[in-house]
Length: 71
Image (tube, rainbow, N blue to C red; front, top):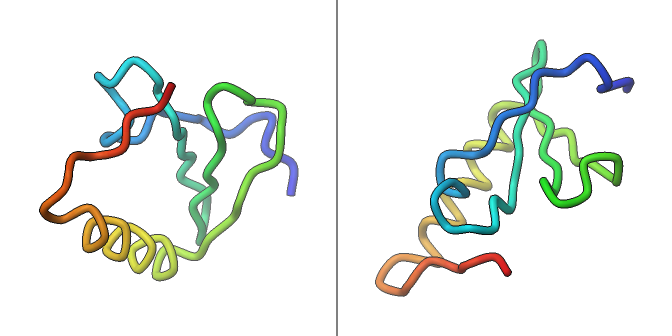
């Protein structure tokens, strides 16, 4: 899938940590995810349901611990 015209934004959990690790793009029927430090590199396409499951799993892992800081 061609994503050059996709509107990328920093993921809400990536802002304010100095690393801006992850960017997401809202696409018809899916969510694209990429490393903000490598915008021309690989990306992952997830269905909206899979993206929600991923976000819930990450939150569950991080619960009770300091969030990961990108360097």
